[in-house]
Length: 159
Image (cartoon, rainbow, N blue to C red; front, side):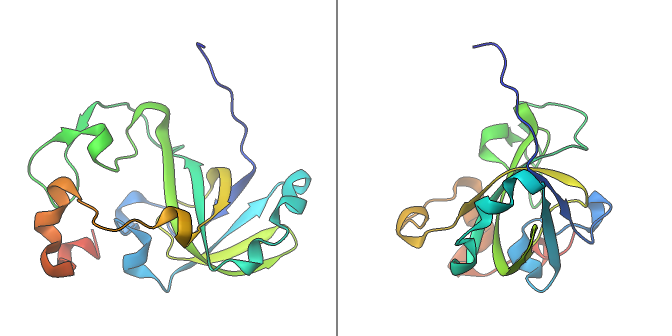
């Protein structure tokens, strides 16, 4: 298989118009609200999603202009492999965010814990299911040293 073609199912509307304003993870700025505007043909796909508290959003990093195999992530001075970091400059430019669902109205899903640029194309939405998506005894590689004893470093909150 040489090529995969995907089409956006909607667009994210967020208050972030520049990369410098986005938190490194949405959970660190949990009160910020955004919404997904779904294309009409996918609206019935939202049925029952309102019964979940969280969702996983897959999206396309539409502003990323390059592809890297290594990068220097926030909080680090060293480069790491692209599959060990969450840079937008990755092969295929696919992003993932776990968000907290606030409400669903017509073709819009409102959520918090946003870490995505305004006008980002949405590829898919899935319910976050604690029975499937949560893991125990997780190692976080190079990040573990920055989050010792579950303390969030101040630099993780704002860029």
